[in-house]
Image (cartoon, rainbow, N blue to C red):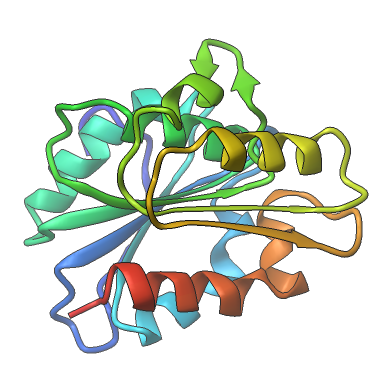
Length: 190
């Protein structure tokens, strides 16, 4: 993957997915944050790609989407934890991506991270967007609410879960089933 650090790619269990999910980790995180959940997504019919990103995933998305296109993928969903959520929103706001960005999932994404301005980006994204955080994870629960309020997507979802966990850990606290339902409704695997 030119331009993207080595990662983990898995085709769907059926082996014919045309939709891929590109996972971006949080600050201090890694591919390992996503590993416990990837099987649920491939079982639902999606291909998955997770990479190591020292900076913003917004800079890695074009190379990752180009690489996925070479694997027969026709559209992508960007799923990010914390800085990964912010970078995914920033990348989705770009008009010229190598593959269509069919939806975005932001788990504890802040409104801004380094040069990524998610609050500006969500005012441009028409694709479905899922925002989530845990209520005692400050300031991220407030950021999720602000992003949702600013979003112009006609298919946006906001979930605030009890607790104080952050990023990919939301998947263990109930978000996994909600994200799978969001994907099934807005970006079916087949």
